[in-house]
Image (tube, rainbow, N blue to C red; front, side, top):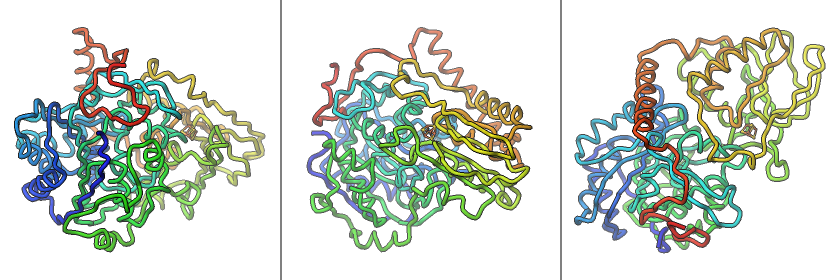
Length: 507
Ligand code: SF4
């Protein structure tokens, strides 16, 4: 049965990124859970961002190396392919994130391991039939759909959209950009719950040696010195949440996933073992700061005044936790990381999200930026009467078949153009649903009068090269007749879930 109906979570001490030690711990975990890899075995780390600017955002290569070696130790001949695959943060090529995280040399060290940059693979269709789904089908990279033994290796982190990012949340990395951005708004929790119908991990091992507080791209390092393993995502997330003092039944995406039959958040129903007790792990995590701070509060006392009204579907939510407001919190932290004087140097500005109803206290010379398609507001700015209308399109009009993604260069040019054109206007507007972190980094830097994040650096040159390789690879595949998006119900591997409402593979 996938996911396991006998949830077990193992908490182990590990105070170093020592691949040999992690291999031993994970091997013992697999033995205790009575698991052996088989068929197409796919390991998915979290590589949302890496390199010198994002040192604590990703599953460290020593960790994934230990997991891959342990899987080899437990292979009794049933593995037909051992692979590691991921889709990192949008617009950035995953090959760039792999490189920045040192995954190339690691994969070579392990030997006989394939890698998949998910956005360079065919995207296949997974039909959905369960009650309450957002859509009737999702797209996912072919290696995910075909996985027989799926191993989720997230990084233990907080998240500004979803409080935490453990096993269930890490599923956002099993979609490419064009499909990931659909419903990545105030329905994000429902989207994450829907993604669970694509595949289920037989094994989960989280990098909680150095965990990440507060945010997901630029988290503050927090030494937990733990490797946590399990056989059921929901139960696993429940224990991880309990470690930082949270009740997973109150964390929307985990609760929704549990409600749909993927597992329990009830700690009394989960067998917890290991050489660190839950109480000891909780003592280590004392003071760990999570995400989920409203944007108005987040920017209190800074040069930015933030205002947020409800997104569309106000009856469901008074705030868009899954989109633009969370993205600006990540954006400002990236600017703070690259410029210590960011807050001191930033010109005063006002940012507005959703259907905000209230005054905007903008003095002469202070720019007002409406962010996101759903922004709408009527009022006075600098003596002018201003009416900003919502451009939001209902999600029913967004068909995954028709979705396209936009090259990072063109997104950046659009932001520059919008800001330039609004130079003499009382306000400017950034369109999108959501407006990405990258776009908001650029907008804040220009409007705030900060150093441009687009100045050439060794990192940006490396990024440019990897973008060319990515686009070249996809173009070459297309030239030889490989379709990027494959229509029709996909072939599935053994890791396809078996929960009420999941379609039979091939249906
Ligand atoms: S435009 Fe932004 S704030 Fe509005 S619903 Fe979309 S993601 Fe949320």
